[in-house]
Length: 133
Image (cartoon, rainbow, N blue to C red):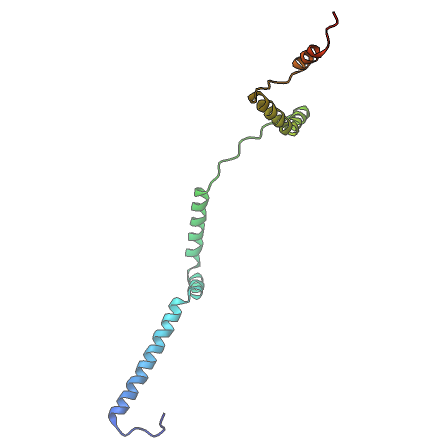
């Protein structure tokens, strides 16, 4: 900027007007920054109205506890005895083997082979032996 004061009054008026606009814009920017600074606004509200914040937090907590209230758990059933637990464990261990065996039996039956049973095996052995009478 030129250090010599302008001789024209019109130029001086423009300079004054720009200085006034600059100060106005500075105030508006400061107000906008203050309005957009949410953490500072919350901090100030907490300092000026602590009772309101406490009452509203208590009401919100009460409402949330009523909305997400769980029903009490049913009474625990008495536990099974040791023999029942062992039988359940044995069944759990043998279940895959039983499934495989039963699947093979169904596959053989569907293929027309019949179910191989001990009685059928015995009859097959007896029919293959020579007649000795």
